[in-house]
Image (tube, rainbow, N blue to C red; front, side, top):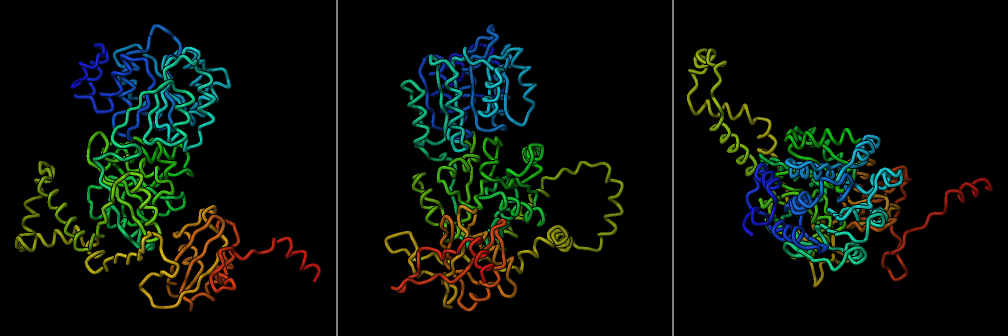
Length: 567
């Protein structure tokens, strides 16, 4: 198939397609649309975000829905409010020359208004699972005549814990229905849903299973954890036209990174779960209108976001789940355009990086951190290019030009250029002209395994290290960045060199230069992390001389109180 006319659409749909400027079907559309229009089979389509999935199922769905029936005939489930609104908007564009009624139902909006719209009658419902369950419970929506169910971004819905809701909804829909499942990855949970609810589905895979789009380049900077923010700034400064999402691990980290960027003069803001829906909408509107260059977000908050023409996805922290990386990088390189994914990786994250490489079946490019000289040159020439193309048709300033020329008459051409550049870039150039370049960490030795050896250290110091136990771990949201922040916040004096960090579920071990250990233990034992009292001590050795794997177990606080009363 080479064009939409050959796919079998009626004139009303074709006219809408032409209005939208669609010329040729994208690969996923060429495969899905004929099956939906001319076959009765269930379909599993594995394709990345931005590959044209909405039109792939939306255009044939608009054509196949009977506008004479005043009842829901098609149901589209999606993970987030933002995606729900986006899909509804796209379907409305596809159906602009029909009488089709489409309704979006999602949380954060008036359920009474949605109930009133349902009573008036709709043919297609686009819904988030939670709100649809509420409407079913109130008896406000009837799904008895639904003949097509579409699960969009099914893997995201499962990651968000919607499996029980999906099962409950699908029990309300007639068994004699067509089911289509769209997902970026094919997990065991997705396979289980397909086996339970689909009838001999045809599987369509764009590219390799669980892989990213071919037009996205995957790169990483190897950095010290303490230098991550500095490197993020250098990326932004080295790419003057950057339009990026920066992914962080936690809400706290997201807000901290965004606040630093704003403080340093960048057009940035944060998107995370602590924001109200009104705040989220305000941030997203600014980002879509390009009033923001960088959106710093958690994975949960960014699910379902639909933003065109992102130049970069930046992983400030790599995700724990390798499949999450696929979703992150899929937000750039959309609609066949080229995209760039950059990860800031410190030495302890190398194993995680290798897992992602194996999942994608691709090697990441290790790239050097931009130097101050590189950044200054890039910014200056970008400014010169803008100067060349700036519009000068401003009649308002013409009356001032004679006086301006008279004032500048004594300055020769080269001196004038130098002064203009200095005025524009004085603060910026000072940041990098004399600033030190960031040194790449020395990679840890690998001996047949990518895991660091027991006695490995950062190679920048010959000092002896003490191994310390601390009573917080991954289940407390405690990672290297939080450890460094805890030490910096609760100690005074010189910066304490940190060596190897071993994070476990309920506790952790870390190494510091021996001469700092006693004072650090005293300082941290006065501290709290997320209202939990911190306990730090020297990791005890077993009789054989090796460090113990189990933490020192403190007695419960009640025991201390009882013992004190006895004394």
